Image (cartoon, rainbow, N blue to C red; front, side, top):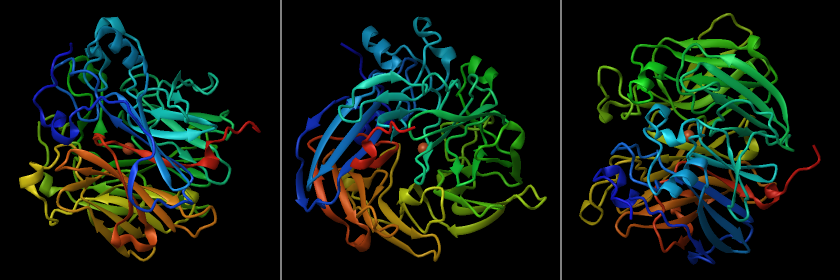
Length: 492
Ligand SMILES: [Fe+2]
């Protein structure tokens, strides 16, 4: 028998580690699942298998549990499986946690020294016929998209030599290229960034090595038709901290924002660094595009440290009420001498986990979808207890980035939402015309529903509610994968 998880809000209530692998064939549905939806919504959540080795942990430090919702002919089937990472396999054998603190190999049991530490819990994508479960400190873990069977650590035919691979690679919708990078690419706290372009057949066709101006988290990046942009965050790391057993990352309070712009087929010498004198916490990339000379990147930027669990060295963490976020459009002008990008405000509100119509990724676009937290929305404390400690979004937003028009839908006083993904109504539908698919946390019932919202009738809420007989812990990221994109490309 294993011991109990600590009495800590990150392991309680809706976010208690469920540890259930499940198959539910043909979910019960209220409403109508659009018959034209033919594909799979893949998502992944951190669901720790074992109480933390050191007695405490972070919400997002848990073993990756992949969920797949398969849509076909108006029906939805659900399955979930843990990713059989090296960590999963070693710890299951030992029946306890062997890996220590988040992203700190110096706290691990000697029995697993040197092993790949991936939890594979941050994102799941499909490329060249394989499902990849991703964690930014390790190589991808390949799985079979139909059965969720783990194949193993994946290095693209041995050509990817980086120790790490981002959880936010981009797929070019025109040529099918997978564009990716790894930071701390030569080991924890190193400044090396490895950059890769992988063709639609899974072959590495371009590699570059960069040296970032500081050792810091680089969680997401931006890709356009001709360029890539690396935001080097103000969430720093260094080897001495790790060896001393401190948190792997810490907020750097008095530094400038740094962005590196590289031609998509550029080498290390081609990178151009831009800086912004005011510090900021860079959120997820919404989308990016270029016109040949100017590179445009849309992303939320907050005024202070959003990651309260990685405080600055003084111990200070900002009062959550003091956090302000701006959906920002950066313009990097490559024909100008200035090394400061222009900032333009698209909207000012707390909105994250952006998804767009992926057919417009890396190109000019207009529509974006987000999870939002509206502090003025009613919340049924009596039925739900305190709001979840880890992640709490209570609504959705559809944003027209051209006009600034916002449309919202709130999930109600007993519900929270997880990241929404977008599925087009048909392969030729106009941009943003289709469906949002997402999990809703029923906080009063400690149970999950999958909902479908028609983007043409956004405010009216779900047209279909698929009921799950279990609770799916707050996940991190996922994607809609049309059935046609599940095919293996062997033409490259
Ligand atoms: Fe992310």
